[in-house]
Image (tube, rainbow, N blue to C red):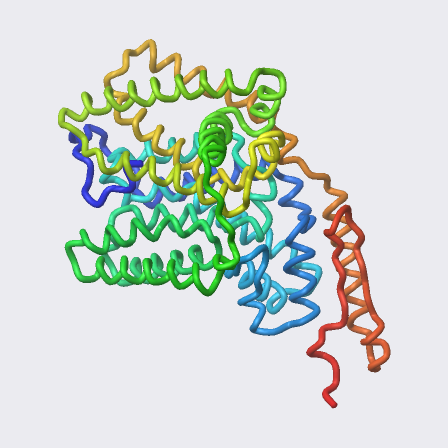
Length: 456
């Protein structure tokens, strides 16, 4: 996308007068995004249930065996540093019954920041109008992307964290010491929490060779070293068996068109229903053709509106991220079309690509907006809200949870907190086990923390 360029893209001088400070636009964007996400998954926010990994993989083991080594806890073949850190902080700062709210709040806040990041003033070099950037963030948030787990589970917040770090790193270089420290801290947490951060390696190497200042070279060198170090020490990359064939290429192409392209516009449930009722290959071909023609038309109009020839590098890098992250997901998780295309879930593997696709398309639309006729503008402003409302209603199953799940968890944690505080002698400690039974392998099993046992 245009955010990936080292040089600002030539734009015509904006005639818009900034009536609001840039910080105000950012705060308004954050409030709007937070409201949209809250209305979409309010039960998961008001009554967090710590579903799947949050309760089983993070809360229970970290509570039963408190140690600083939990920061290096492995799960699914990699170290999720940020979820580990969040769980350790939750257990250290909050009573046990409040930990679901702490962990959910951290994930929700990160989602709001990531989806509002493009409205920051530092991205004016790519789109000068503050209101236009805020509107792009709002439209992206309004589309039913992801699911309630991506928004509220700390185990899945690594996707928003990585997208947030990508925008910060691929945007204009920071100008102050505090901005540099914030950038490095965010990138460090993102890289050390998600194996897909490997896609940053080639970009960091390129920016290392092309950076004009020493501070930018040092930043890119740090990012490249961090990516390589995490790949070697923080993941099970050595045990990964990669098999690349024609069927793999076909799988990647199918995912790019269906789960990245179509799902970004239609939502997971609607995309699934369309593929269940239509011929998948026909849908893929039609979607691919429409996407190519639409992108070409937008790019041509944007270049005419700018009055100059826009550089090709940003769009090459934009395509690189879409393809590279999808390829890494397919190879890293051994995804198959028949296995994952048949379900609207597991969309987290394509979530960042969807955000990139929509943000880049929004930039093209905003740059060409001035050349559109009044009728087209009015029609667009009327049709977009009309289409977004039914899309959210149709895909609501991916974001809906029940208040009962959170109430059961809260009652369980309150009871466990009382019972664990009463384990006095060694026999009680050794035998006390409190279990919240759930479907599948997601039971939450709490025991008296090992550190509370007397030493011999």
